Image (cartoon, rainbow, N blue to C red; front, side, top):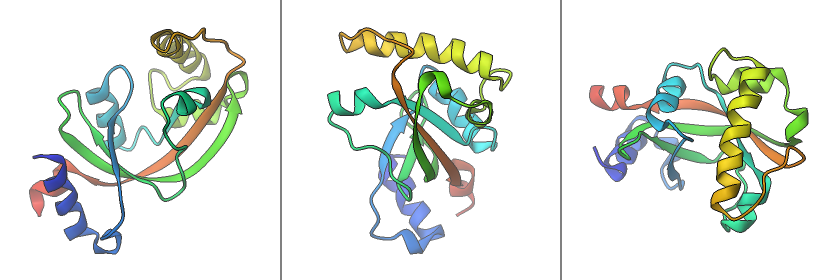
Length: 153
C-alpha cells in the first residue's frame, strides 16, 4: 500500500486527525526491525542529533506531530504521534530513555554503544566530527495505527 492510501485508511479509523499533516520516514540503520519494535510496543522513543536539524533544514519534532514510519522498502508500517520532546546532552541520556528506545538488551550501555556508532557515521556523512558533547533531541511517541489495522479496514 502506498503512503497516501495508508494515510487515508488511518483517517477513516481516526477522523479527528482529518486535515492534519504528517511526515513519512524510516528509523536508523535497520528500518524494518525498528518499525516492528514500534508496532509491538517495545520502541516508544527515538533520539536524533540537534545539530543535524539545522544542517538538514528540518524543524524539531513537536508534541502532536504525526508520522508514518516506513520499512526498508518505504512501505508504511504505522502511524505514530509525538507525545514528549526534550533536549539532553548525549552524556546525560537516561537509562529510562535508553529502555524506551527498545533496542538490544534495553540497557543504557547498549544504547550508548549503538548510538555512538550511528551518530559517528551520520556526522561523517555531513562532513562533521561527532563528539559525545553533542545535544540530542529525545522524542517519545505512541503508536496509533499499524499496517495490520489497515488490513482490517
